[in-house]
Structures are given as C-alpha cells and as structure tokens.
Length: 147
Image (cartoon, rainbow, N blue to C red; front, top):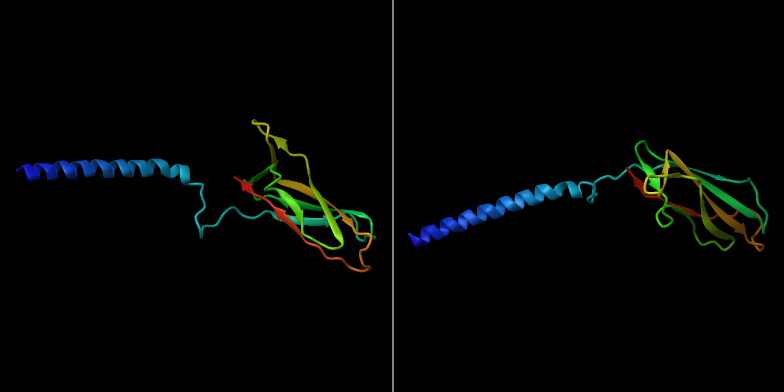
C-alpha cells in the first residue's frame, strides 16, 4: 500500500510538472513569435533605385551615388549607421566616403525613422591616376526593416 501511495504522489507531482511546463511554454510563445526560424521567410526587401549625380567624371573629381530605398507597405527603417548604410567596396581607382542620410521623422522616443522611402548618398572621389575609360566599382546597400 505504501508503494501505491508513493506512486500516486509521483504521478500527481509529474502531472503538476507537465501542466506547469505547458503553461510556461504557452506563456512564452508570444515573446518568440517575432523570431525568424531557418527556412521561414522574413520581411520583403525594399526596392532600390541607384543614380549618379552626373553621367561622366574625370580623374580627381568628386561623385555622389544616391540610393533610394522604397519600403514595402507596413515596414519602415530605423536610423542605424551600422545596419542602414551604403558601403563602397575596395577599388584601386575610387575612394569612398561616408553615408549621408536624408531627413527622417522623429518618433516618440526621439529616434529617427524612415517611412515609405529614404535616400542615402555615398560620396566618392575618382583617383587622379584613374585610367581613361569606364571604371567599375561596387556598393553594398545595408538595411534592416521593421514592421
């Protein structure tokens, strides 16, 4: 009889433990609902439109690359120079400067937000020793959308 009562207490305690774990998991699930798991799709990418400030350049001239980000509906970008920027890749004939940001909107926490679109500019300098003809360079556009 003692063996049965101990078994009953063990089963009763396990039932409480299982119920506690179920409630814990159900209670924490909303906290992790925004985490993307491998294989799941994230937010859509913005449309990017790149333009140069003029068509031709001479060695020693400055140039400006503009990239307009068109954000998908219900998404926006927060000002963040680490995750929202233009990055010129290494080139022998082009020296890239810093990202210049368009004016955004201050939210209630006084953080700059970009809704609808944003224009980032990247200054660059054509080397004095750049060869005549076409130059090629690459720019990475970094972003991290919020919903």
